[in-house]
Image (cartoon, rainbow, N blue to C red):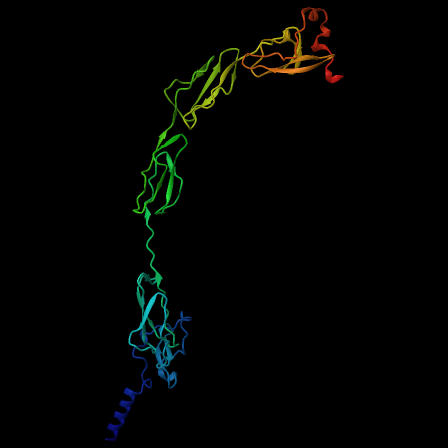
Length: 345
């Protein structure tokens, strides 16, 4: 009878005194303690109740793993979380109890959830809850605008939100037909269709008086195509002989063939091309825009007066007086062009 009573007593102790012979119901289900758990201060680590003292038990405390915790300690209440409503799941806030967090309408957690549970930890703090942030409407955008042949978009990018405008431009030598600007509208379509780029041509070049054209005769010429003009004999070209079809569909400056000039003086010396000589010593005529210097009288000395040839006209300076035949033939040293210059007096 005594033996039976002994075994019953031992069995009763095993069942009713926690942690004397048994550990946690399922210690393998508790995570291994992390070195620095987020938002939690870990209590003393343990493997069984005997390591914790009389008032604490060896229980699983989340990321802290098996820890010595006081089960009668409670977490603070109420808890205010921005943009959310909180509540106690079982009406109590002791270790292991849970608090529900429900985001207000229009708010969600970073994970996309609207609800979550927070646990009362051994350090008397609620486990970390992701804040509830405002749900932003997704940015509406249009598809990438159509590309155009022989042209390009001036804006780069892969996303074009509502309200964004883009600009088209044609390559050099092409003209834009259609709308240069289009905008992404609220319905995520573009306000205008993509334009086209038409190749630019120049018309046949104009005829130049007293000149002939060195080019293949065509009805139209492409941009940057070149032609050449040549003036008739004894005429000077005013401008470039080379003419180019420009990007605006017009030809560059067209040259003009200018007439050369005869020197209107006969019995005097002049300065031409840096040399002082008698008029009859100058062969041919004076080229367009070339200058000839004559000499005028200032009482007893001479001073220069220059005139320029322009398209066949070389005017005598108003101060110039043509020597008479007698002066020229019998008194050549007294001709104005031969007397002492005023600058030497």
